[in-house]
Length: 425
Ligand code: FES
Image (cartoon, rainbow, N blue to C red):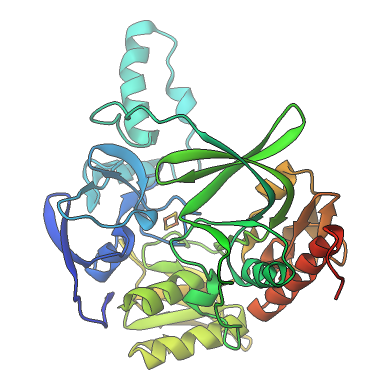
């Protein structure tokens, strides 16, 4: 059972499907849900399989819920507010017991909802209603979205996206060399994986004083106006069009869901999501946690879990199959040439991030298949330069430790400073 190991000292009460939940101020709906010992937060779009949060970083869409009448909100990116009304969606009659899950059994091989279109007007109308319920995502909002203010248009000489190990290291070097920059970070605090752990021996979080820093600013795209590239950032419900002369991308990647049967059961989390829950919210995902996948990360995470009072099992093993009906109750693993089924109430999957290369590609960088890591990574020269005006560093370039990412940030910053007229290292 997931539970809190740290007491709530600033309570916030909100409701999920009419039931009152008390959370710690500042935590997200998804973490509050897990901390309350719950598992099924949503249902999958087509097969109505139970879903719980997986990544806690806005990358997997397993936590979409209706909040205060607005559908498809990321529970892992939404802070709890007093009186907030959260509804689990895509289920009938409700997410804990969804009769539409019959779809999963009836169409166990495949299910093409387009074939429900019958071609006869009245029948088609009926079938459309059925198909929408079987394969839709949320219902229309209670009220129209408020009109957005016009975007703020600005120009910066150098934009950095991502304030993790690589971005912060670059920011420090650029500050020391007097190169002006604006750093965008989608989280409310800097640090990335440095703040959520899973990487012992990582550098400390040091934000250069006086840096132009935009926290809580999500860069959602990169476009061009008459050949002039600009970033689109969303900060406090306001869009910013940020024209830049040069760009450093250190925006990392998304947790990878390892492939094995039933890997979508609630209670299966990305390793970094578990680390985030424990370190930043004092929430344990379970009492018996299988910590599988990449051995180094698994060992670090297992130490954290044990120090927090959980049992860590099958450390670094290869997951073969998850078991359970509504949430994970056991995991078959392969370790040392042997296959074994272990009872557990949570699973942490430790795996390299999948690089979030979309911005880099939109900026003109090449993305290629890296056979060693078996991931698509952003290609760049030794200084991190991917195009004449774009540099990349950190996990965008493939799996690496936080220390190695910081080193890449330093190298990229030195290269940028050199092209700004600053001294080379
Ligand atoms: S997107 Fe919210 S848990 Fe993955």
